Image (cartoon, rainbow, N blue to C red; front, side):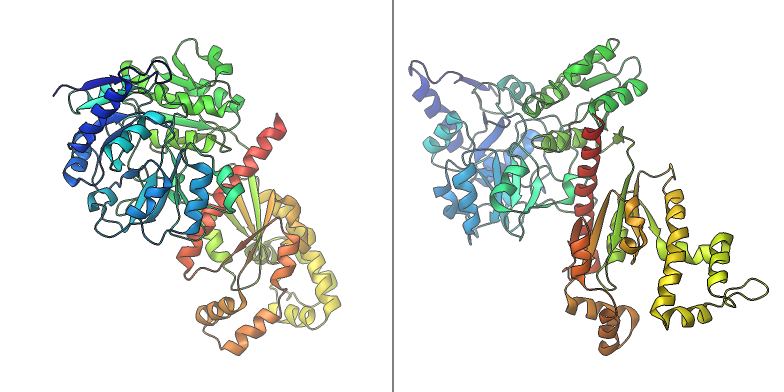
Length: 557
């Protein structure tokens, strides 16, 4: 098959031939053909989105798994009701602000209008209006929406020029439209509007900060920070499979730019390749290097990242090491693409330790939150467990308690916990004395446990986190809170006790407002299941840890 080439890089000059080229390109789409098209993000591989036979050819040309849904591209928001139902007002708010532009919205699909091959069998459809005048003109001329995933062979880095498209697709498709290099360079941001709050499924050319300034808090899907596992179905393009990958294996190195550069220098070998910021090119004179631009220029990073990855396919490098920008602005999208190219093989160059303090009342969900910390590779320090261990082993603590509470230790050194409890709990002043002793010995012990070099993330679990002074060891404190009635039901089920006793236990503790007012952050648990809250907590802590690391990196600079 001969692939036709339409040069539409300059449509602002004399218009001779422009309309004919647009018409010929639109005819390819109407006739069921495949067409490489320019957008502001990356080049797309377009087909008539209402023709399942044509759409199937996209999967065949790309070698793309059919459980990976496609985006339906339209020339404006007025086309939304044709293909979507129950469109929330928020969709139009976003469209007025960000369309045309690098934003894809997940909406409920209008039954039977959109072929199931587009949606991968889901009841939702991804909608986008790109900001490229040539592509908008071709879609309007064709009179149909187009399915348009990135125009690369599946698994390879995306295409940001028409020549990239020809490299992957020449002879497989009917035509390529050259609209010049892409101005953004990474795919569109995908936002799921079928849930509340909206959920970021893929970071892209529209920074999440811009979205949150307009609509408030956005949840971040777990697929943004890790690979989906077997059996997990993607809700949007780019969520599941290893994407953007060159032939050589990639290792992404995160952290402050100077530290990540030094970490790459320590690891790199003869025959390896490097993707780095401009300031650090001089470190790698013995390697093949492709640059992302200055370390502070996120737009340059997004414009260059795919070109850097693709260029290495024409070399014999054995392994590629890539510096990674921080998660602010377009950096989140660039980092996501690099990490997917690496199959999430990531090295953390920034050795900064992060310590979180978690506190809150019983039944709020601290156990699930702590499991989320552990799933991120963190170490949990349970202050209650530490206290009970110290009662058995710490001679200083034992002597201090013995002096203040004579008779609670037997002659053979065993602690009479019942007697100690009766003395302390029956008198508020005596309880304060016991707490003062425990806090005096607890804080240095926690500090010692935080010196474990096997971990860079710690969570301190303490009901008296704030009162004990242990919060001073933490980078941030987090209050785990939950609606009262949910707490009651959880305690009843967990401890097999009556509703009356559950309410009595809660009333004996400090109210949520106490923790809320004194902690740096609040994580509220309104989830139906422990598993759902654990997933929510993981996303929360991922973002919090990243922000703490960025704060520390900037503080050091």
